[in-house]
Image (cartoon, rainbow, N blue to C red; front, side, top):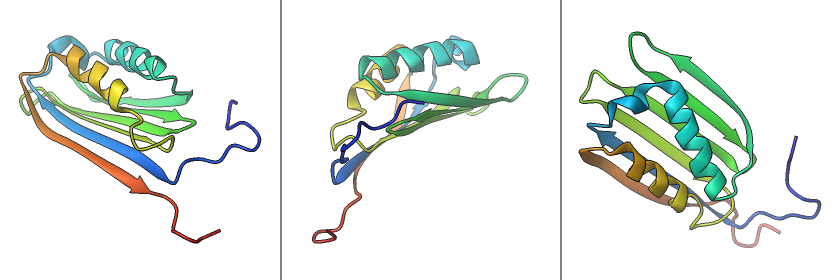
Length: 130
């Protein structure tokens, strides 16, 4: 398993990006199609994929969790509620990390509406905690 290089120290601030989309293109409610998109988007920003877990919800829908060396990406679908999709990405690599990945995903989904667009810079270090 890949991990941080010896001597690596993560930055003191992580980044969480959360979006909720409505009227998402129907093809992205197929797990394999969404996995392809997610893996391509994560690769574009050089995330390290450690594994994935998925649960299908017949007749349509899924939850997908991608474990990253840098943290995680989670997706929950709600086809029955306006073809909605919740997407969250957290990264410990810095305060700008994950924005490009989320932009690639958002553009591909062809969503009619974006209801939540939240970004939180998450301090993971306390001043003077050396």
